[in-house]
Image: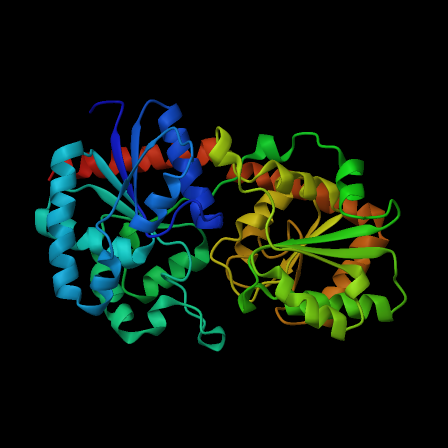
Length: 408
């Protein structure tokens, strides 16, 4: 088997988006390229067009047919037929050795549909969030649509391999009928070395108006009900009511500004900083490294990190914060408890419990010994998610699946 592989990386979401899915796929493609492979990322047409506007990526990116996933959702037989033909034409052009698919729907089911008919397409599918998880109380999950659920249940269990980034995702695979032998565990990764690089903590705090004596509580993620940011603000109000005044809350993520009204109503507006986005221009000017340096500086400037989610698939920001050495507080929720291993690597509280969160924050902010111990645990745990190790696991999985195909 040739040591260097041509690898298709189809996905239904990509840069310029900067969520966990996009960051993860970029880092996988980047490291595959650095190792001598030929990764080709296949993206929806709008993402492809956006990337033509001055973005600099070291690997090749090509577009899916325009509007194909909308067609797949409305008319599955026609969408599958067009994608089958397009996948075959694309294979003949690039001669892919392996297909590494991100998102179980719509890309994953499309690829499996093609692979089952051609029968010589070594592949894996990595589900990443709403494509596999469902939380009806939050209206979260593509499979809440019965039509999507039916397609996912029919095709995903037939994939060569389903990659579970956490035990919670593996449980979802089992629930839709994926055989145990077709589930592999490979976590998401973080760039540990970059997250531990020295930054000017004092300057970062001064830039954002954080006082020298103030404890900075950081949370990162798009403003969605599943993130639990409303609970964090309520916990901050409880801290203030209990007499603690030397803290600031900083929430960074798309839509964070919408939390301003709640902060004002709780009387903690002066204690709350909300940033919709930071960074995001690196790919336009040169090599793209994610997370952005400005976010790393905020991790380094904080005193404690909180991820108060109701549900997560992986919670990459949790691992980023741990790599930066922050004590972490998170919830006993899917995708969170998998990372901190039932409370061994950080403090774990029930989801949607503002008083429990306030109590955990009080402990970390008020007990320097506990904060130091949790910081050390964070740094040790983050080593399990170094990107180089993650990509090595993927390389081994590619070769295993290719070998299985060759032996059929």
